[in-house]
Image (cartoon, rainbow, N blue to C red; front, side):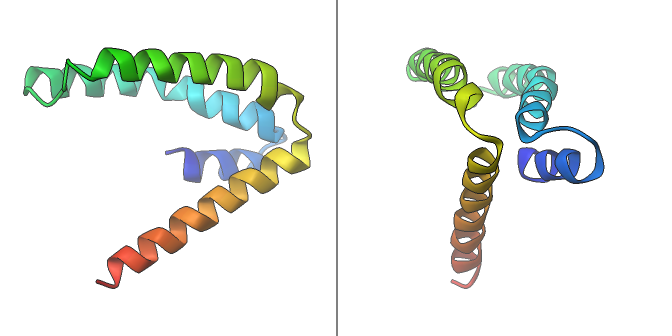
Length: 98
């Protein structure tokens, strides 16, 4: 999802990193709802854990986006995203070698 969409939007459109992240997050809302519904129908949602996880995610996203992400310089945001992708790529590569 975002690991392909965000860089693509930045590289191939005139979007800033901030706009690409926001657009990618917005585009994920409906698929996330459909996925949640589908998994819930099949009994794959841990309802004991999910509400608190959702609440924590909401609070973190709200305050992180408002107080940190929106005030972060474009280059810092881009660099952080690149580092995250690099770490996740190395982790996937190591896991695949087992």
